[in-house]
Each structure stands twice: as structure tokens, then as C-alpha cells.
Length: 125
Image (cartoon, rainbow, N blue to C red; front, top):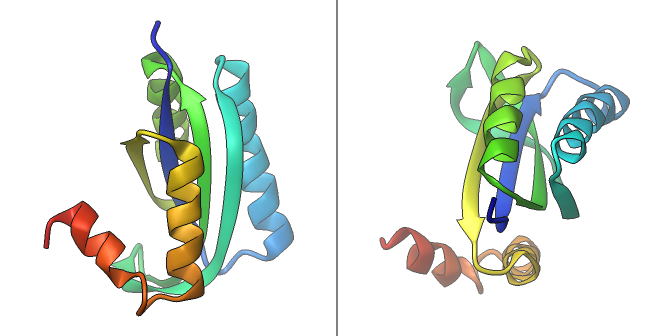
């Protein structure tokens, strides 16, 4: 199967501690690796207010994983994330280069107003 690079954003329950969140992420990293995927890098975005309430939660812990995987790995990862009650939401997006996507995100995170055009270019707004 063909492998591609992806950006996986995971939003975990904001009531968890950092240690509990790490345990949850570790479990999902193992699913990716066990099924033949490779985690290229990670970014911890931290605890943030959600745009809207999810399961009566107003805050979430955001983590972004950049990975290389095939369709079977993604299917299994999404299935396991969906089963996990501590995961509020997750998004998977195919990227041309995980390294560039991470650099773009880090730039946006560091200076949101200066780099806000990146998001509008991507979304098409």
C-alpha cells in the first residue's frame, strides 16, 4: 500500500491532567506504530477553550501528530480514536510535507496575526 504524510489533530478531554493525556496519546501512538505507521513529529498545543461545547466540555487538550501511514493504518487509528471516550474530536488531513506543515503551524502558533493568511489560504476563505 502507498504511504502518505498526514497531520492528525487530537482534542482530548480538558479535564485530564497532562500525565493522563500522555497515557491516552501513548496508547494511540502504539496503535499507529503497531499497524505499520510512523510518527514523524508531534506538537503539543496545550489546553484551549473549544469553539463550541462537545459532550458538555468547554476545554480540550490539543495535540498534533505528523505521521506517515497508509489507508489501513488511518482506518484503524480513526476507529480506535472514535472508541476512546477521553477523545472529544480528531481530524486527519493529508499534507504534502509533514515537515513544512509543522513549520507552518509553529509559525502560526508563534505569531497568529502575522501568519493568519496561511489559514485563509488553506481554507479558501
